[in-house]
Length: 371
Image (tube, rainbow, N blue to C red; front, side):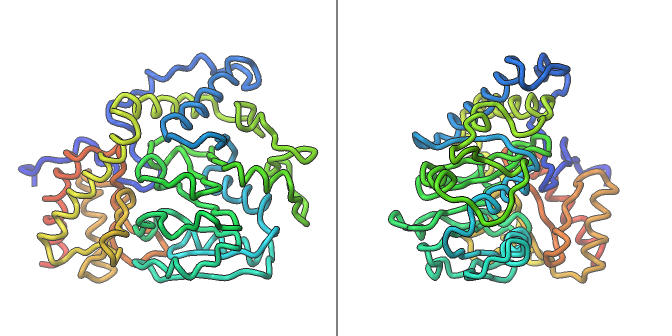
């Protein structure tokens, strides 16, 4: 096996994801460390990360970006507890995280006017059946199923409810129709390979209006509060976070944003991810023992790419272990709730050359477990 080249970077995990090419911890700008995040130096760093996020993503005028605690999960929980209950809710789920949001809505918030649109792993529900007079909670990319929403054509311009989108494996890797989305959440440790524990919230003017006009029936802990005295807490969206952030993580996120700028901005990052998927798609077309979990070609994720193998569960585990032992692919097993198989991250921080180097090893591992 020494005749096969190994990937220079074997980190194909779907979260936390691979650091950007050329990443060096020592090169981070660390003048904020040991300083208060409330001091000018801290607020400026947080404000720059917010402003650069909005600029690189090309957000519409009036959309707000905020940094919040708890990664994407914290961001979604904050939104659901702060905004839901004003009208009915349609929940759309085709993998584990969408199901988690339904659990919160039905069992924790105990909302009664709830419609569900569920599908098995590998499939999308009927998006045209969603009642958009209600608030809609959905994921853009199913991180654990490798199934993404192909576009936003199904979202009505005259919708009455809010479109609340968990987009943590999509932002910076997929084209997003911002004008059709009212709340977007994501985390640093996905597409940009940043560090965990911090979440991002993007709010449309319609979402801000909801926050300022609606008070939930349940108490909100401080860490979930986005308003004070009926007005949006503007500091969250300018650099004054709800709780103490890790300024080292902020510096790491800024490094990733600077890298996106350096490679050509958002279009380049998206194209890089698409090109990575193409490497794997060619391999699937040439080998009959591996298939995409996603059934429809236009729903195949270009970040968290999920596969099924024509193998038993034990063979799949052996397959994954072989690659890990050889140091060619780490953390590529499917999510614990998903069907047995592989999940290979293809976001822009992954190099196509490493994916190409991985392919012969996939064939080798298959031969080992099926001989």
